[in-house]
Length: 227
Image 1: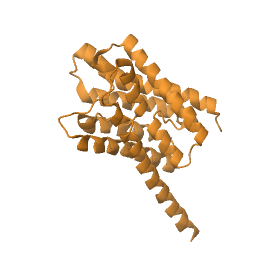
Image 2 (image 1 turned 90 degrees about the horizontal axis):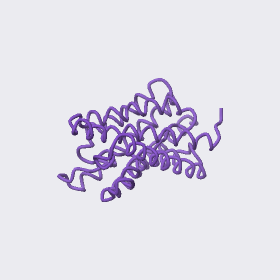
Image 3 (image 1 turned 120 degrees about the vertical axis):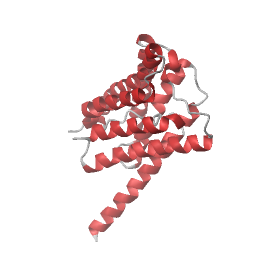
Image 4 (image 1 turned 90 degrees about the vertical axis):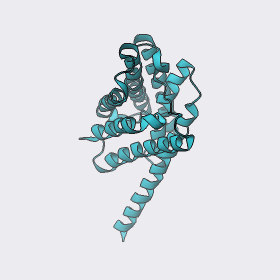
């Protein structure tokens, strides 16, 4: 079944909203209620759950991007058209801002609304490549499940799992956003912009690298099939 751009637009707003509420709301809730004692494991679990909901609810309609960097990766591999980039990007930004507004209204305003922040005890020459790596691994898992089983079976677990693992093991260095929309919304509403440039550059680099690698891989496979 083919879905319209309007349907894609709507579910991307909803899915991104859910992701941002869980991903940033968990950080704010931890700060408001537990003084940050739940820490990174709690912050890693929340987006895992959000992506389980999003992938299984909306994957068949929009491929469950919820992330502008992922959208660019899908464009490079030919899954979406140029005009669809506009629908996806607009929906993802709107959904993210609505998510942060929800967090600010109903959960709290501590921790800069859950805005991503790198650990400046590390050099930017480590922080930036780690953010690229985290985003590249996310895109790699997404392409793996799409090109093998589609967004079925354990795909939601795999995609949510890599986000959770990236946060668990890499956020103490780079903040592990992997998602420009998720980074933008809390930064915008809290006025915390100093680190935003990292999350509006590194994730795109990571997903673009992975997308080109997958393009080359499947072009090579198709060439072998014709021999």
